[in-house]
Length: 225
Image 1 (tube, helix red, strand yellow):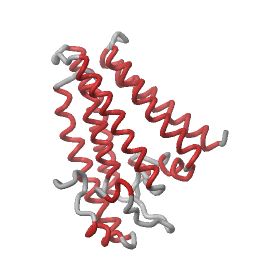
Image 2 (tube, one colour):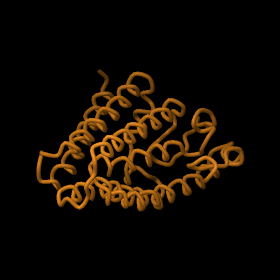
Image 3 (cartoon, one colour):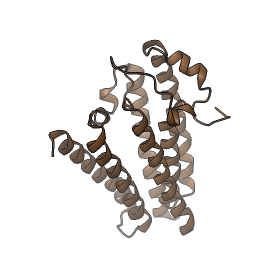
């Protein structure tokens, strides 16, 4: 196993431990089957993607490991990344608090639907990674980077973001919370803020991206926006 693969698996393990803490500490119990099922689906999805990148695209794997506010080069993106991190934690923790105090009564079918949305969102992200080896977690343009206009990029400009939003939409349901669906609003606004800033950077720095913007009209949702 290469050092990169060891680092990637170690980073994933640390992230999943933090995720488990965010789920079970606010719940103050391990008797929370919805959280265990969500953690299993989330872990299996992220592990499957990581193993694929280890085998088929180590350069993208290395790019994906340099993430977070500190990795961004532009001040605006550092701020956006901080806001996105806070919004993501809210998407996780608020449904757990809802479950703890029984504000919502969510049937098992809705919980399973939420987990299915989580898996679907990750599947879309996986398709994006297969199509675009430059799908960096930070906004940057590399010397050899080219515009990708095939696969999901032929439908919308930001397929990875729509995959992320589908996954995030499933989180509150998977954790047994109706009220948690309200947390999707702020993180959606943050993602829209990020993609608009990203388009501005790429249009200025990536040859051919302005033409791509003219060719593919929709950013996230076909026929809508």
